[in-house]
Length: 89
Image 1: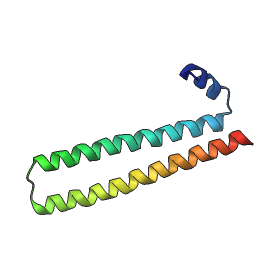
Image 2: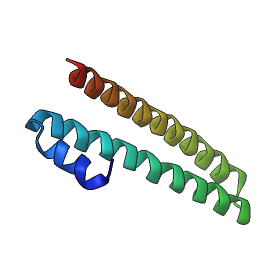
Image 3: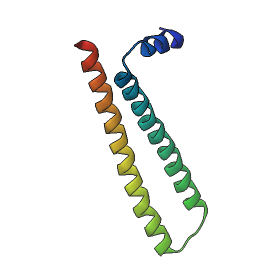
């Protein structure tokens, strides 16, 4: 299946279904961006010798961002499952 055919299929769907596609793709895109940002931040931390207080604060924020990225992935998965259920109805 090529991408143009898939886009045409999505265009023929009702507005609320297209909105789900949009929000699902936004969630997936943000998860990817956050993962890249977290990875680059950890590499930067290894290269720079920061004070222990700053490193612990950054590590704490990094853990928070990782959990938020997981939540976004879960939301994307739920949206995908909902879309599949709607298709099967």
